[in-house]
Amino acid sequence: MMSEREVHGLVLNGGGSVRMGSPKSELQIQGISLKQHMCSLLQQSGVKRVWLSGEDIEDIYSEQGPLAGIHAALSMNASVDWLVTPVDMPLLSPNLLKQLIAQGRSAQLPCYANQCWLPIYIPSSAQHIEIATHCLNSVQHRHWSMKHWLANQKSLSIDVPDRMQLNNANTPDEWQQCLSAYR
Image (tube, rainbow, N blue to C red):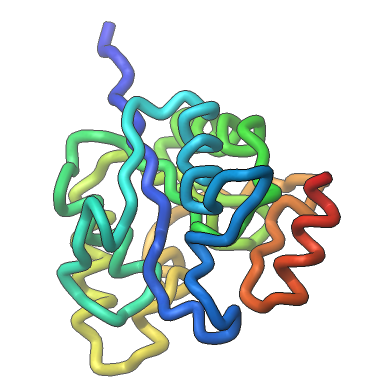
């Protein structure tokens, strides 16, 4: 019987936080930074190790968005599965993350929720790296997107009734809404 591959977590911690006006990763939620909060959520979902893009893993393709951070992680360690979250989704639940792992592992496909490209479970596959490399080498910026990457391979979108947990905080108003919902 083949053992299951380890799952590592990746918090996408890039971007300029221009609309927020300050680094999103350092915003405070219940006395800890948002970056620490997201790492904790990944740990609660059962991942073996958590990495921060931009800190632990540098992008190979700089300034090319979330797909570049994912590509860097997949390239660094292609022998593990990855569970990827953005740094700015404080309402995510460990249960949703566990569900992405379970459904994605069962189908052996990238798995995300409600047509929202992040968070995403990505099983180990050289094909995922190859497709990401192809997308990121494109001169057309729209090809750098998660949507374009996923359109070039089979993937699985699961339905999650609690859509609020997929809200991200890009502006001070959105951050306040997330904090109000978190309480």
